[in-house]
Length: 156
Image (tube, rainbow, N blue to C red):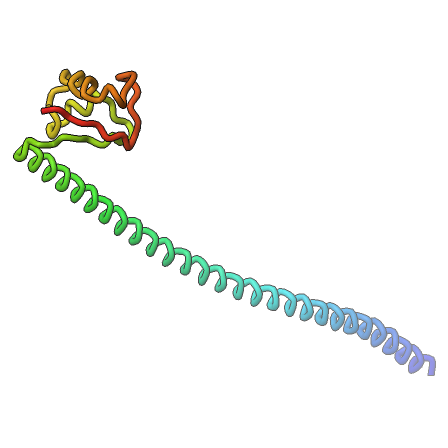
């Protein structure tokens, strides 16, 4: 009987140790499963965020292409307007030379008598500026002070 008791005692001790080890392994396995679920959820959230960021980047890239195209169109339009402006100025100068009867000039910002006289449609010679000055003594007190929108007579 002593022998049976020892065997039963050994079996109960062994099963108790094995039970503890099985419980510990079960607890660890459950913790690992929870950790795996957390990691999977975080991975799914990050994947969703990456998709949102890629969509936003694509939208910004498309917008940048549209802006680039719009800028190019505006540059072309500006160049066309500059060319037209130059053509119109050449036509005005040509018609003025043909008629020879330009009797007045409207001052624009940045003008001076020297530059006005230098214009091909006026005299084509900057040294002729005193002609304009003396013809407009009623408007010009100082030859260095003329103002935009002043209308000056140009003697021929």
